[in-house]
Structure formats: structure tokens, C-alpha cells
Length: 471
Image 1 (cartoon, rainbow, N blue to C red):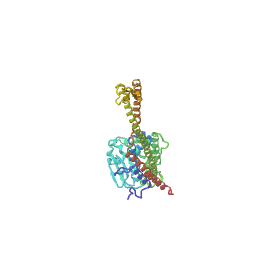
Image 2 (image 1 turned 135 degrees about the horizontal axis):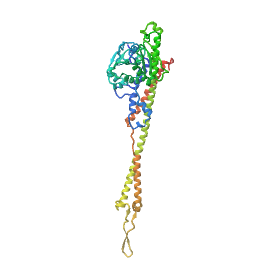
Image 3 (image 1 turned 90 degrees about the horizontal axis):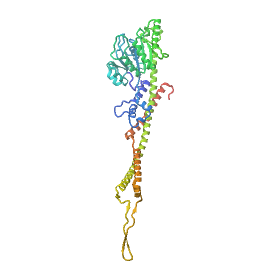
Image 4 (image 1 turned 180 degrees about the horizontal axis):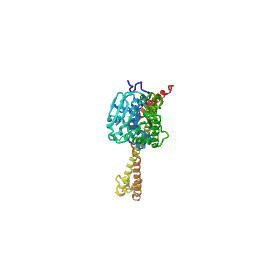
């Protein structure tokens, strides 16, 4: 039985990639998921702090994607270059049809599954996000299939092959824009393997044009293989074929210093003499796949560390900025009480000033107090009533001095100043709700308390897999 996810038979690299992908996307259906993908979506939503977050942190969180748990090898080349044959050889099972006729008319994804089955285009599109943009290309969905195999040969559980139609010149018409599909798939591929047939078909212009454009943008991903080298004739013929193809590639590449054309053939199909005498780089190709897997594991762990740091930093930024806003709103509440009281007082005094000066009314008799009349008994027995001078309130006098103009100016100035302070000091700013603060606390706690520990455990597992001494 092939190993299933979590079985002891899984390689360390496979375990690390699977566990890391679950950290990014737990795929929980019950309750809210606790993974980096969900956290990134929450932290990058447009809220009061969105515009204030550092751009580098925001961009990293927005571009956070769960890493795939395998590398993707895109196979391109001319017709009958052996792409399907190599896939079958690597998998150790006949997945693709092989013949001189054009067997691969569509896009075929070959990857490991828990059972041997085939998916059509719609199911493949829905399951694998890196294929989503292919929906924009007319006709491709009907010619897209995914073949699952239970094989555990070589590093197949960690490899996804994408076999593309052979590129030919002439009147052959494809059911979709095959060039555009290849360019789109190349954006997501880990390795781009160019397979070239030595029997006069390697230099077809369509194939060379696609290779040239891919090399312009993805030269670091690309490697070139002259397949079926055991069928290329005698030594002179083989030398001529290699020279012609290398010259053609050099004429189309900007960076040719690292250009290498590797010769290869399937050892099981070659004669004993060919296996002994001819250079066969097919095992080197397998080693390159192994190196890419090892590199992917390290890149995933490094990216996991950086993503955790970025999300944690965003949480810290939001918490700090929210704390400042809470303090601001507290002071705004205090200012609101003070300025409300002051404004009521200023408005009251201004109203009274207006009544005194323009209404000639002292409604509460606050400004003048008439003294009570006093009776005096005179010696002759008569009685005299004496009325004193009225008492004048000093503050009311200030309100009336100069026909009330100076006081009016002061009161208007106080009123304007109070309004200005009101606008500036009582303005409240948006802050996080209690639920949002709790969410941030939970995210920080989970990242620092759980995910960081998981990351360290995965790093330790990788180290112990290589070093003889256990750490």
C-alpha cells in the first residue's frame, strides 16, 4: 500500500511540506479556522489602521499564500520529444499514452493521490488555485485533466508534473491557445523542463519561439534536455545534432553562459551498448528534482518564519495604534465635559449681555439692588423716609461699559475660541471594538505560542534528518 498522509513511510521532506501547508490553511470546516491564511485576511481588511500600516508588512500579508506541498515540473517541447514517456518512467506506471502520433492534445497534470483516478477540468480548476487563471483561456477547461497515481517511486509524492502538447509547425490547430497556457503555467512552475527530439523536430519555429519567450522571464527555472539520445545515430550524427540545437538556443537566449544541453534516454529502452557508451543525464535530472524539493522545504520554512514575523508585527502595530486612539478618545471625553460647561457659561453670559445692552432688561435684577427705605424719627416728632443709593454689581457694570461693545467683543472671542477648541479637542477617532481586540490577542497568542513552536519543531526535524548527531 502507498503511504498516506501522516504514515511513518512518508519522507521527512513530505511531512514538513504537508504540516507547513496545514499551518497556512488548516481547511477546517467547523468553526473559524486558525491558520495564517485566515489571519492574513483579517489583518489586511480595510479598517481604521489600514492606511497606517507599513507597506512592506501589508504587501507580505496580502500576498500570503499557502505553499503547495510539492514542486511543479512543467514539461514542454516539440512533438514526440518523450515528455509523456519520461513522466511514466519517473512515476513507474503508465499514466500517459506514448506513441509517435500526437497523443497529448491537452494539458495533463500527473500527481500522487490515495487512489488511481482521473479528474476533468472543472474539478481540477476548483481544487488547485494555481490553475484558476486558465479559466480565462477559451477551450482549455475541456482539455485539462488530472491523473492521480498511488506510486511512491523516486520523489513522486512530492512532485507534480504538467505535461503539455507537443509544439509543431504546419497546419495543426490546437483546441486552445497552447502558447498562452504554457506561459501562464510557467508562472507557477518550480522547474521548466524543455525536451527536444533529436530526429529533426527539435528546431521547429513554434517550439523555439515559446522557449525563447520563457527564457526571457524564467531562465533560472529552465533546463534543456536532448531526449532519445540513443536513437540519434552514430557519433558524428549525435555531435551534429547537439551542435545545431545549442547554436539555435544560443541565438535566442540573452544569457548563454549557463546554457547546457543535457543528453538523456530511458535506460530500460536502450541497448546495453548505448547504456555503456552514451552519456545519460536522466539520473542527474532526478537529482535536480531532489535538490528542488530540498530547496522548497527550506524556502517554505524560511517563508513561514517571515510570514509569522510580519503578521505578528501587524498585530503589534494595530494594538499600539489602537491604544493611542483609546487614550485620545478618553481625553476627548474630558474635553467634552469641560468645553460643554464653558460653552453653556459663555452663552449664558452673552445672552444676559444682549438683554442688558439691547433689551434694556435686567430680568433677574442681578445688576442693581434698590436699598430698602429707612424711616427716621425727627426731634419734632415727624418721620422722614430715607432711601440710599442703589448698589451696582461690578460685573454687570463691565457688561455695560462702553455701551457693552468691549464686553461683547470679549464674549464673542470666548465663544469662537470655545467652538474651535470643541472642534479640535472633542473629535473622537475610530478604535477597535472589544471583539476585534480579542481577535488580535488570540492571533498573537496563537502565532507566538503555537505556530512558532511548530516551526521550530519542523526546523529541528529537517536538521536531524541531515545531521548524524541529533540536536
